[in-house]
Image 1: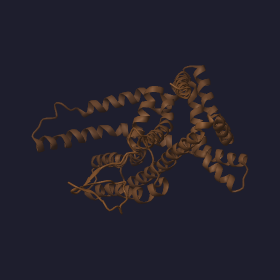
Image 2: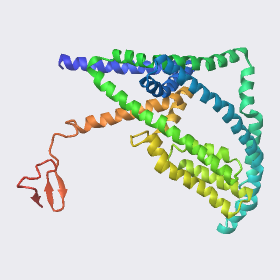
Image 3: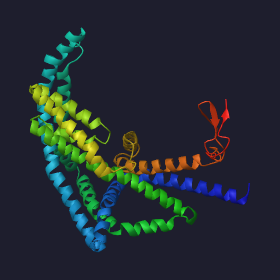
Length: 385
């Protein structure tokens, strides 16, 4: 083994040891890292707007203050308007569930039994499920009561909760202000031989993650508003809640429409809506899907390659299982990096001697064996077989 090979192997082992060390530190410090990671994600989302304001002639500090105030107002309005509305819809849904159970036992199950000549009534008790849901909701006392109850149990819990909430805007502001300088310092620490490749992969990772976070989340919010408004105009009970959930899960193609239309049709049937209103419910989701396919996704997401829906679902579940809420926050950035690294590894493999990229490939074309990489003007285009 030559000295250069030994040094190269030693360098790889050092990088592996560093990655293991960083992973271990993240796992050990996960209880206190959540506000910092959340602040970094907020700063990353807001940084493009800061750069645009800087290009428009404003100073970095002025641009940061404008973006920070704008993000704070959006978050405050979301908390003030959205959470009470959602909790009110959930409370009404809990009270509405007995009607759903009665409709299921009085209409759906008899129809299935008559249609398919099976017996389900003795095996299926919707009221037991409804009572179980109501019992757990009453024990929880709603979202606000649960949060306030947990906070009031301990003075230390109050201090910890307040400190975490207060820390996020402060850290977000400093991240926004110093984002570019922090990136420059990190770039200066990268070993010089791998710096060009590392920066290329980092830019690709940022593009992939940005494609999903800034584009797909915008699509989800717009679709949620379209579904909620459409169902409200049709007169479906819990239209806002159904539309919000359908928009939330629409990052998986067609899943949002499937979940939304199923829930909305059930709610409409329990209400006793006529066929015309049922058709309007379907039309709401047809319009939403059409707008998503031809306007929202091309405009907000574009043609760049984003994260595959299956990769998104798996990464969020795996991150939550391994690191809790911190893992959920880190899931998408890590997945974006992993996907870029896998594409880079695939490019390196297909161009390597191991893959045989430097060898001529013989493929069958009709009744001839041709050389795809050969000159098409060659006088010997193939071999008869």
